Length: 472
Image 1 (cartoon, rainbow, N blue to C red):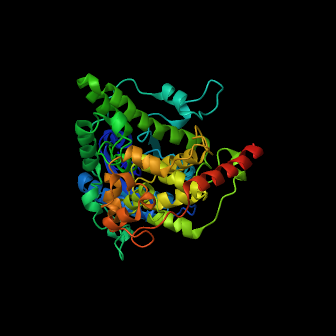
Image 2 (tube, rainbow, N blue to C red; image 1 turned 90 degrees about the vertical axis):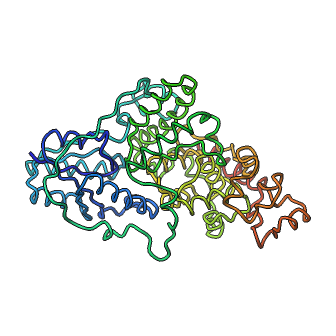
Image 3 (cartoon, helix red, strand yellow; image 1 turned 60 degrees about the vertical axis):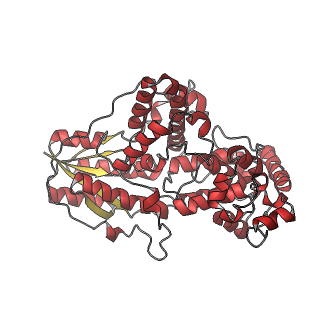
């Protein structure tokens, strides 16, 4: 018997339920299809995700020894591949984006009507998003009770890499023909030194974090100037590593060293936020485009292309914000604490619609994930589930001083400010002229003046929130 294994967001061989099931049946036909049929704003990957996908597929092709790479309509291509290969079954691991759920449901029905056995599995989450409900029977909207219900207490052993035989020579498009890499200009230059996409890279990243980063994680995870986060998010999004593998590794580390139990719990709770985001997306499929709280439809957003561009380029005049936005552009990634601060700045200082920030992150993050992206932006905006109160407005100066106290993070990404004393590194506009001159900084020339004043921006944001409260 021969089974088509349709790879999607599960670009790995270990702990892959769809692959393991197919390998037990007989020969396999591994395929990845770049779905070109979607027309919605988030049905196609952003540019940074395309870069990662190229390198991840290259790694998977080398590891599996013959991956079919196709592009177009998955339903048509899978039917044709089944005819050519003589496959009598197809398997895949489920995706949870609303358009993917509808697509996969239709494809499963079509394959079954053609006489093929079609099986789907959970290979991307700890639990299916629809398995957990409140006592009232509805979806969770608060993280703590959700995580209490879902939180894994044990360390379930992941599935091993199965032995398999490929049924036929690979065919279809070449990886380069997909056009996933930037050409002119090559804005991803140097990313190969920053990242190692693929299952081996994911495993190395997890092992390195558990060995050197897990100790002190609970406190250190908020420090962008320290290497205290896992950076597993792009590997996890593309399925180069499974959440079960991460849980198993973290639990095992805590069992071996009792002092790591608290750190492990905190680390896994961040994985819980990912699960919570998928729970929200599956229960509220318009989460990426509509306020979960309808009263926020009354918020008076500003439209300012100039301010939006300044934020995107890291030229707001607030170094902690600018460092984050430049890190994003130069590496395709940003530290989570800084994501919150930069998002808050766009929404609450500039009063620009959160959906414009969501769209920018979608295009520029290598770990762009529809569930995480939409849930997190709505959390910061105050319009989503378990949201931060709207009146809590991050002060980018105090946030920088608290979480980058020596200015190392700012100096790395805003080198024009590197000679400023620590006292002024997060607020150069407060520095005396003599200090600026000594540091070689001319505000408005070498580094921008603030595009908005914090106290005034806060007042304007709260005034807008009053309109939301009246609409409630």
